[in-house]
Image (tube, rainbow, N blue to C red; front, side):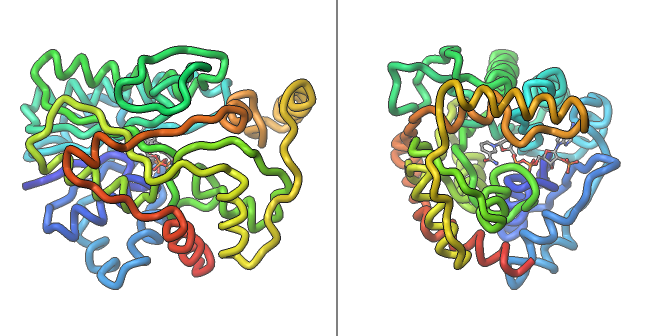
Length: 335
Ligand SMILES: NC(=O)c1ccc[n+]([C@@H]2O[C@H](COP(=O)([O-])OP(=O)(O)OC[C@H]3O[C@@H](n4cnc5c(N)ncnc54)[C@H](OP(=O)(O)O)[C@@H]3O)[C@@H](O)[C@H]2O)c1
């Protein structure tokens, strides 16, 4: 069985690639001309057999926004994992997210249909479940609602899912997974892995809001089990535990041997002033602001997630969040 995977230079995709190789699959992984293989190497380095397995990856060049590069790279492929995306909470990057997350997914879906791929697994996000002030616990059946707390990233992932469902209507077998915040060794300067760096560097503020967390190893293993099962045309929320941000920060700080954030992040009008200052600074420097209207949204809502469906469907048991934090911090300290 030969597998094609997108996003294998990132946090989630590198874990999927690692676990596929441990299962003996042949893995062809997409990389862009500017991609770095550092994160993948760092993830594989967490395991004794990492270097041997890393060397077995067949790297191919392409871009999900370039349809023909995908079609070409699907030659001889049986199954596809699509984990590539742009995760950004900078509203200014919405057009780019629409291009990469929505159009990129449409290209993957169309190429899979054209090449007769047996099954596609699409790594979506809990952000694609939307937000509704009346919903506390989100699951696969939560209807999409677009409150003011829905981020541009969430909209792009929701629209990407619609491309997958369109593919299913056209005859593709597919599974969608919706992970919550993913914990694990990745690029420590961006995405969810950056949480650890921020705390190490002395992040001062915490939020008392609750959200879901899941280990990158679980996202990978659950996703592979779903691919290898007879299940098709379903979506699955991947969440180990729902935890208050303050507790997550405290656990990370403890594992790092550092003092955790001690000031409750303000909510309301004061935050808008901080966002505005960030916008002005970013207009001058051209750099992504630290706090944006969208990143603040995530810290201002309580969202819990249920993984009852995957537990029932394949009996999946998640790694406790405390173990995920220790694993990620150990890898962080080793860098
Ligand atoms: N991290 C989380 O907390 C989280 C939570 C829920 C869902 N997810 C989902 O999980 C998936 C992976 O996220 P991640 O955390 O692993 O992100 P990541 O570390 O930022 O990795 C993103 C990956 O996508 C690739 N990519 C981006 N644009 C591409 C394009 N146009 N063509 C080909 N490859 C492209 C990147 O390649 P380069 O190396 O070239 O940049 C990289 O391999 C995404 O679909 C995301 O929505 C993540």
